[in-house]
Amino acid sequence: MTKPKKISTKERIKSAAIELFNAHDSLSITTNHIAKAAGISAGNLYYHYRNKEEIIREIYAEMSERIESLKSFEKMLSSSNPLNVLDESFDHYGDVFWEYRFLMRDAPVLMALDSELKRAFVINQEKRISQIAGVIKYLISQEILENILKEEIPLRAKLYWFVTAYWQVFTSMDGEVSRESIRETKEAMFKIHIAPFLSARGGEMIEVAGK
Image 1: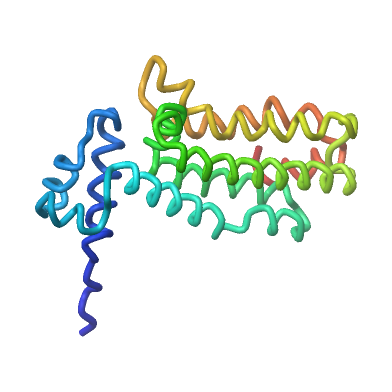
Image 2: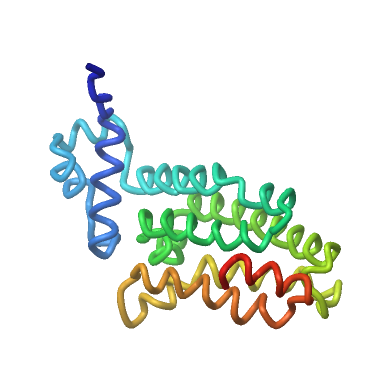
C-alpha cells in the first residue's frame, strides 16, 4: 500500500496562510496567526519565511505557475475552435482564482505594501497583455472576429486583462468574492467583449462552445 505523501512544513504554512487570507482581510492576518493555523511555532515559521510578504509572494508565484501550466494561449492558437478553448480556459481560471481568491480581492493593497510583489505582478501583467493581443490578432486573421481596427488591439488587450484581473476587486467593494462573481467575469467577456465582434464563422464556433 502506497504511503500518503508527507506534506512539507513550507506547504503547511502556505496552505494555512491561503485559508486564513481567503477567510479574512489579509492585512489583519499575522505570521503568528499563520503559525498557529499550521500547527507550528512562530520560530519554525521564520525558519522558512522571513515575513508575511515573503509567504504571499510565494503564493502568488504558485498561482501564476498554475495559470501558466494550463497553456491556454498555446492551445487557442493551435485549436480548430479557439473559442471553445477560451470557454474551457475561463472555467479553469475560475477554479484557480477561487482557490487564491484573496490575491484577486486584495491585489492593489498588497502590491502597494510590497514592491517585490508589485514587480512580479507587473511582469506577469505585461506578458498576459501581450498574449491576449496575440490571440486577438490570430482570431482576426482566422476570420473569427471582425470589425476590430488594428490600432485598437493594444487597448483591447489591456481592457480584457483589466476585466479578468480586477473584476474581483470591484466585486469585493460591497460584497465577498464568490463563485458567482468569478463566473460573472466570464459572462462579461463573452457577452460584452467577444459576441458583438464575432463573424459568421465565429458565431458558429461559439455555439459549439455553448455560449
